[in-house]
Length: 274
Image (tube, helix red, strand yellow):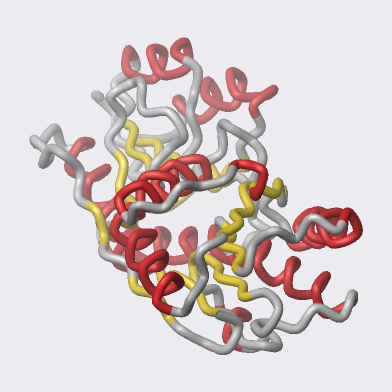
């Protein structure tokens, strides 16, 4: 690239999610220390091509947040010399774009072993429902962790929570009303969905955790403030963001980067919900 802009674009999927908003804040801080500024752009699949063309003329690199771009967009960026890195592992890693994420297999296995030690043998899982979303990777690692723990997962115990509080509430409400609450614990792909599920249970008189335990992922700030406080997998957002920024800036400078990309260790924070 001949002309540096000292700008990096960050594609975000849902700024209403406190987890993504926090990542953006840490990314901006990490870029600032390296003399870079940030252009924030909300990713919409239907507007991907025009957004990529617009950003490519203004930035030195592109930081995805778990999105899978089309091959055409990736090829266009590479031809322009715009490096790409993904902060969060995408649903499909088919384009050779390095990513930085939590070691979700390790985190899910520790979580399942903890739940089994508490007597939970029938486990439900709340997904995003969008197969292209980065939550898909977490679900895949959950399934692998179940297999490594010698537990068979019943896919009838999958709920689609849409990644948000309200959609998770609705999904949990439908499951409660159907009378098919066939699991003793629900693991959710993010905390917003876990909190929505807890709210639905509270509305319908299902006691947490006596009748149903709930576990989330990400440990957003409100997770310790809900009732009951949420057991969740903690993600070190500053460490994750800095690792992704360092990788992207190294690519911008034309340096070799480590392969495979680093993963960050996650920890289960046990609170009253599970």
